Image (cartoon, rainbow, N blue to C red):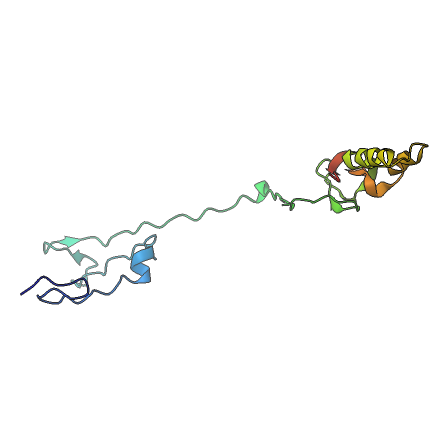
Length: 161
């Protein structure tokens, strides 16, 4: 007889696969609460007959004490999780990390890289008589700083380039 191929079963007794463990066996449900042993039948004297045939007292079971919260020490801590804020050229409603107030940011415009590049481009095109400074007056060409109106803290900057 030749050796079995990769898709042929080997000759011999077939083994039936066993069933996988149950969910309770896998996770260990009720492993925290042991089940008490069943009392063994014995005389009506209140004693239980042990495995060796002698009488013994009923088993005392250990119970887990439940912690009772102290009424005087109740402290509630509220945690606010804020998503990252993306700053653009429009005001943003957010919670200020400095003063923890809900605010709408105030905008301040500053000359940035796009402003200077626009000014240089206009100079090269021949706008030397002062027209090359127009980008410094146009908010759409400047960088934007976002400030808190309450505590005046700088919250973020939007750079055009």
